[in-house]
Image (cartoon, rainbow, N blue to C red; front, top):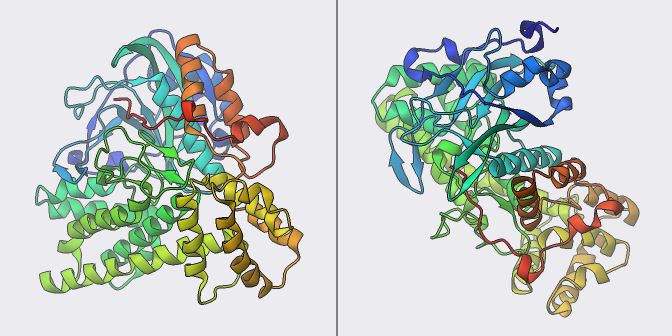
Length: 493
């Protein structure tokens, strides 16, 4: 039998912070857990013994039945703006941080059980998770990682053998989530709302050491921290837009200071390109629509800057000026990342005046013609080699593509490159496959209704290579038919 201390070697820095940062927690014991999926490659990267995780002892840890040697289970405290309304105490209401491990590259990584039962922050909830949301988060977070988007990861999913009550009784499950950390903008807000400047300083120093060590040698370390978090979030949101991802609940408690995508509740990838697209069932006003994500990210970062004002140099007025200066940089950072990515998506390597207008003209035509975002950009690679039909056929009015393509080709001609090489480069940034929402829902229905996990495992395998042409997965590349469209996703709590 593998020694649990060697199989999951914990070193828990967050648990060494002051007691007011968290509450001790004990995972809910699962009566008859079954392993659905284990991410063996991720386990290897984390230095965790995958064979041990598959053993009875490992399953007991993944299901909350037992506590591994070295684990110090806690629920983290945080606050947050939810749809613009501030809630001074949220915290981990159904997630328990088991501890931290150092991965093969010397990076500290959180190991957390999601759906692990009630904590001191549960606010009346049951603390459990239903099977559907667990499978959604596993699949979508692993797809995001394969797409190259910074994200939390999924190490394992288990069924608990106990139902949870939502609109109906549903199978219960737990997700083992991995993150660079689970520290959020809302974590800083928790202490700022209490006037606890010392806690903000301790937390900021912890984040600098863990995520942004270059700030430690800066003359103004907390301004450097603010700059680093702003830059990471601007780049992250640009990456979301470039693959058509809609987060759904960009509350400040879902904004990671590590610059990772966190919390895959109401989220989805867009089919037809339309900046007003919303997938969250609770986002009735479209606050977190696809096209609003950059603006909301900057709003969230403004809330983060507010928490750091007591730490910035020079007194209140100087601190506000520093924060405003830092926040003003968001737009340029985002646009460089976003339009740089769009240039690559349309086959351009060099920046020229007029590129933004060319790209915006394309996006306007795509919206008017209800063009599938993923299929179009993948098909555009074929147009580089002279085959326009797959791209133009996606337009209601194909002449709208033709008119744009004339200008596009004139622009391409100013960058001498072999057509085959250009297409190959485009195929590395334009995925052939995304987790289509209607297919995700069908996968979840099979698992929940029939305990059939074959569709989940197939999608997981296919989407681990989203940029590859996979002839056996052509059905998964197809957008929904009108009767298959799924317009809303739910948080699962």
